[in-house]
Length: 294
Image (cartoon, rainbow, N blue to C red; front, side, top):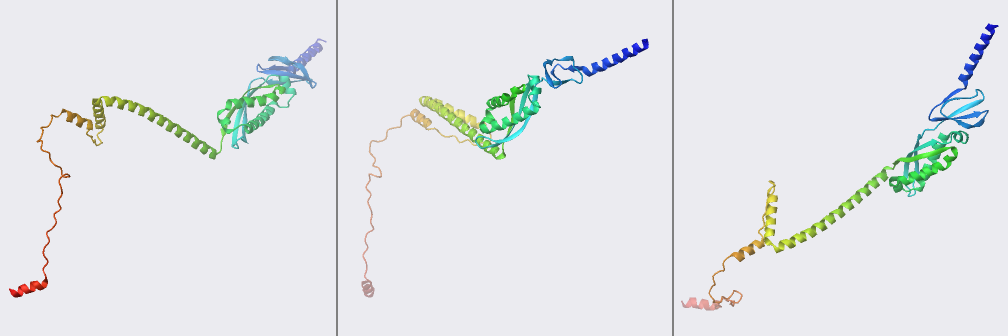
């Protein structure tokens, strides 16, 4: 009798251990457990830790509550200004309602991925190339709103959407490079013109000051000569300033007055044209008679 009781106890203990092992579940801190009893959703969601279910009757589905980083494959599209581009993005989302994520959609990850690809193509068609390149914050917000609207019904919340890269055709890259180069050249010319204008104003002021003090002009000339003479590989041509000539002319003594007799210039003297004297023309017959008379 005792042996039968011991065997029965051991059997019950073994059966209890097997039942506990079959019914025991461990839910991690970042997970939540959704229980389906005979295919019907149980209202309570199992929290993290140790939990028990009815083996063969209950089915526990664990849902990850962490933020999921999902890359969106590159999508090709035509922008509103008829430029073919390829855009890829990344979506950050998390599950906020585990029961709805299990019941309302078959695979919420796949659903979010497809919705992200569709929304990305749509946002490409509605935007221009300049917006894709420079105004990404606004496009990210619009893309997030487009994905988040249907995802709310699936118990999923879109945390953030970012456009990673925009691939352009080679011809468009060259065109944009030429445009950027032309714009930089335009700005450089404007800056140079502004610098020339400011320099001309300063030079005009300096010239006005130097015109009042001729010695300042001489000092500036000497400074220029010193600066040029510092280079050993240059030939220095020194101009002789007119101001220095005037200064020497004023400093020279007055010349001795010459005689008061006016000297007539070459223009005032009359020019007499000396014509050659006419010579008598001899007749050949008279020459012959003369020779005969001789």
